[in-house]
Structure formats: structure tokens, C-alpha cells
Amino acid sequence: MERVNVLDFTTGKLELTTSVQERYLSDLIDYFAFKNEAEMILREKNPLIYKVYEMAYSGPGALSYAITEIEPGKVGNEYYFTKGHFHSKAAAEVYIVLSGEGILMMENRSGNTRTLNMFKGAVLYVDPEYAHRSINTGNEKLVFLAVYQSDAGHDYESIKERGFSYIVVDEEGPKIVKNPRSTKK
Amino acid sequence: MERVNVLDFTTGKLELTTSVQERYLSDLIDYFAFKNEAEMILREKNPLIYKVYEMAYSGPGALSYAITEIEPGKVGNEYYFTKGHFHSKAAAEVYIVLSGEGILMMENRSGNTRTLNMFKGAVLYVDPEYAHRSINTGNEKLVFLAVYQSDAGHDYESIKERGFSYIVVDEEGPKIVKNPRSTKK
Image (cartoon, rainbow over all chains, first blue to last red; front, side):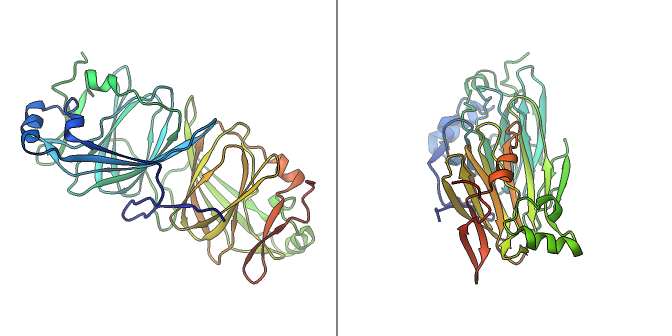
């Protein structure tokens, strides 16, 4: 028998991965709404924001999957998140949340926004045409498995340039508010 | 917030589904290796072999997902299984096993066979070009989540006609043996 990959549903650990990406605050300086606060933090330290453990396959019809672990924390009162991206072609994703609490923020190129709660056991459908960002609003890691087409591609630039229309901040708990840095009308 | 789907990792229950399919022995009479034994059972009862709870999405780039629950049991000494199919186009699947024990049997159109163990936490990659069948070799339900491209399509006929080259039988435990009904050279 061939070796199979194993996922620990409690810890989110995958036995086999083809790559591990780490994103630190310095990598996300252009994404957080409160840049001054981010720069203040960076003078002292460069905290890890999230890690992605990917198991990638290639070829026609291939799917890949990855575990994303977002640390708990905030920049100003904005919760830690993933950069967020559009896919380069229409391509959905399926997320399965293993632990933690958060919000999946989605926005299409017309500016329509959708938000979904993330919690253990939630199975979320990322719309093919929507940019998507996961936001950790809890006190522990937010851990989820994502399955997607290997050739979906990533467009990070649109998000970097204009930002999502909405962000999630801590105002005595998570609150969805207009993004002060969004350049969208 | 929109309603999200919820998966119970222990029971495999999905809160939302778009369809539920039930496959009984009478639906699988042309797939089991020991047809006489299957007909003998059918004279008295028509047991449920497996159920598929699907959450389907459509449109360009769509993915769908489903929970499959295979009952424990045998026809003759061959373990219960899913029909098995090729996809109509090159399209992978990702399986995540939630409970039970089994074997994922894969075979491509050249007759190359691959087998993978199924057990709680196993994450299995179904090759785009391979027909695939899940076989419950344990004493309880084999339950797994599958994620796949919505337009992958199903070709059951090739399997019905020629069978997989190998089957899994109980010979003091699961054993992979040549399929006596396979018409492949």
C-alpha cells in the first residue's frame, strides 16, 4: 500500500506537505487598515500572522489542499487575517474549519460583499468570483482546511491596491465596519 | 450573516445537503463479484449498501462535496463498496476519512491499479485519470467527505462492463485478490 496523508482533526497537523509558507506582519504591512499601528509594532518585533501548509498536486484536473493557521492577535483593533486574493480564473474553494473562530470575508469585483462565520465544523463555500480573506476573531488559532483547483491562481494585487470594502475590528467583540483604507468608491 | 453548512466530524452528519442518494444491493447486482450470492440475499431482503449526502454547486469553476456512508457487510466474502466510476473528464477528488476502515481502490484505463488505506484522518488523493471505488473492510460504517469539481461527470458503465481488476475479500481479514468477473485481459 502507498503512504497516505493524515490529518489530525484536533491540531490541524498534516503529516505530508509539499510547502509551508509563513506570513509575518512585515509581509502584510500593505494590507492592514491601520498602517501606523503596524509600523509601531514592527519597530519592536515582527510577529507571525499565519502559516499555510500545502499539499499541492499538478496536471489536468488536479486539486490541491492546504491547512491555514491564523494566529490570534490585532493590529490596532483590526484582527489578524490572511492577505486575501481573487483567483486568476473562476475557481471555487471548500473550507472546513477545524478549530478557532473567525469570519470569512468575500467580495467580488463589483464590490458585493458576503461574510460567513467560521467555527469548528463549519463547511464554507468560497464563491468562484469572490476575493476571500479569513479573519481570526478568537483568542486561539483559527485553523481550516481548504480544497481548491491547483491551477486556480492567485491575484493578490487587486486586494493590495484597493483593499476589501469592509474590515473586522474589535469593538467589544468582532464588528464589521467600512475599511478606512479602501479606495473603492 | 448567511447560514453556513456544518459537519459533525464524529458522526459525519452534514446540516445542509442538496440531495441524498441511497444504493441498495439491487442497484449493485452487476458490480459484486459473486452474483449468485447477491441473488440469494435478494430473495430475502434488499440491504442498504451506501448513502451519499451531496452539497452540489454549479457554474464555472464550481466545486461540490459529499459525505459517503458505506455500511459494513459482505456479499459472499466480498466487502460492501461503492459502485466506482471514472470521471468524464480529468478531475481529481480529495477524500477525508471521518470514521471506519476501508480501502480505496483505483484503476486507470490501462489497468494500472493503486490502493490506499482508509482510516480516520486519512486524506486521500483520487487521481484524475483513475476510476475509484471505496470498500468498507471494517465492522462499522465507513464515512468520508469528498470534494470534487462539480462538472467532473460520472462514467459508471466502464466499471459495470469490465469490473475492477481486483476486489477486496475477507480471508481472515481484508485481502486484495483478482476479480473473477473482470473481463479485462
